[in-house]
Image (cartoon, rainbow, N blue to C red; front, side, top):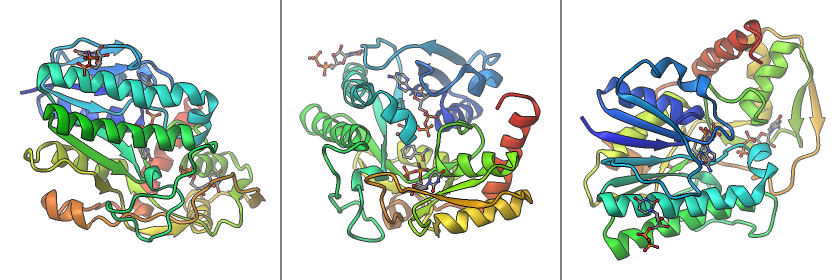
Length: 316
Ligand code: NAD
Ligand code: UDP
Ligand code: UDP
């Protein structure tokens, strides 16, 4: 049994991670400032004596006695991270410094939830970890992209300078139950619009692509990466290589919900990447043949059931 800190643990991915760690018999300290997450996401864990929830902002120092750290704190959807962009960069950069300082003092292994956004609007396809990316440093997505890139720099410098055991995962678009219903991300938007019978908002012509990973597959990748030996630092891509146009996703959601919603076209936001697909060869080689097992159709069904439940209980 280990004592494990999960920052951003009351968020979408974090809550699934906390659940997995608790099921495995660990003690979990979930730290979150509820910026985009909520206590409701971890309400089912509160009665467990191995689970502890702390309201705290990671841009401030944190002193806790733990053996492992998963650093997930950061708003992840464009409307949330662009709402207060300075706070987004602070969360990634100051948050990383504080969690790395904690890891250094405790000699704890530390995992960073990095992102495919470090590749920006990629000029090579699919994206391999060796690619340095094509990121606009001054655009509206930069607070997130550059914040995460700087966090990666800090992780590797703490590794080289202080011999910290680091595990950096570059996460590609992930979806599933407990996504925020109003976070503006494509999967939650389309499902909520379809369930409410509202128009489906397709940005641009909908020909841009993304690769969608179901949250359980992602969390399995986190656990396997954390369990690797010192020689594995990452960065390692974690995502589902199945690539879809956004238009195809819209059609799939409409078909699965049986909705009468019609597709409407809206302007493409600036700096919106045209294509994205992970090359997961490294994850397969280093993480015991890790690969996603849940197809988009199957994962969408589970996510639709979740959002439908929220609507029926008046929570969305
Ligand atoms: P989320 O918004 O649901 O979760 C982020 C959590 O961090 C929330 O609970 C939020 O309240 C908390 N948080 C934000 N700022 C904080 C601060 N200063 N101090 C403490 N807590 C803070 O998003 P998610 O999808 O669960 O993403 C989790 C992590 O994975 C993020 O770091 C995100 O960048 C990364 N990621 C997610 C995806 C994806 O598709 N979901 C893709 C790439 C990377
Ligand atoms: N820190 C923290 N918790 C700890 C240890 C450190 O939050 O248990 C913070 C500390 O406040 C500092 C940061 O982590 O701002 C970086 O710590 P480090 O030891 O690397 O740097 P220094 O304290 O020498 O600036
Ligand atoms: N998108 C869309 N309609 C929406 C929300 C998003 O067409 O209602 C598009 C968006 O322009 C992008 C893709 O879907 O091309 C994925 O957007 P999301 O915000 O989910 O993730 P990211 O752009 O960060 O990959």
